[in-house]
Image (cartoon, rainbow, N blue to C red):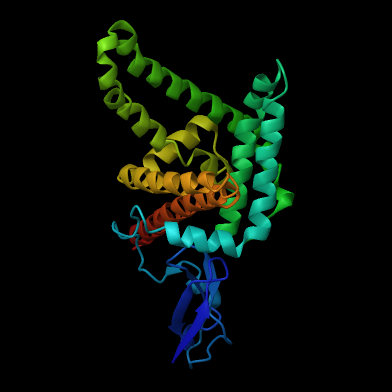
Length: 286
């Protein structure tokens, strides 16, 4: 007999056979973990709930077409509005602190150099915990500072890489002003590279990685998915533009939606990677 229930993270409607009651499944919408209601073995089977911790409703592996430009937009909306209480306060305070610090004459820009990376990791921690159905909120407002070294290093390294590639793209225009129309095409390599580093702060936290290691893991994880992520960023840009047009009040909601969408993207690829490694290990033991 089927049992109907909802994902506790995004409220997606789910269904499972009641013989798996007490087991845990991955929500195909947001990637969060949901427990099948009922007592273990309700349908007559002897079920160890822990054995279903990695079972995905969408299959053992991440299908190539599961992540599209639009596939995570609706789940990100649902997850954000289902967790407004724990998302809005810390993200708004982080933005406020960065704005106040940046407005300090003379030293504000230097101070921002030291806080932007750690605060980015704080946002990664908060959003990833929301996606995973874990407790979070203002308690994680400054949690990124526990990763101060890697966070600062990642922020500086990505800034240097982006700045260097931007200079290379802009240099021909400086020398030959008539080439200004070529510049958007010259910027494509920089966009591709920076897109490949998009998951760096989530990896710094989730894998306790150093700055360069996190950047390289992000790059490798996004192989074959950079175009998809770019498409999602484009759509999220339109969402944030709509938020800005609502007297900027809408940004209070659209910015967290964007961060949650990136956390979901990371979690989808992370779980697919873990399943692949686990299966490969099992095959090696046979």
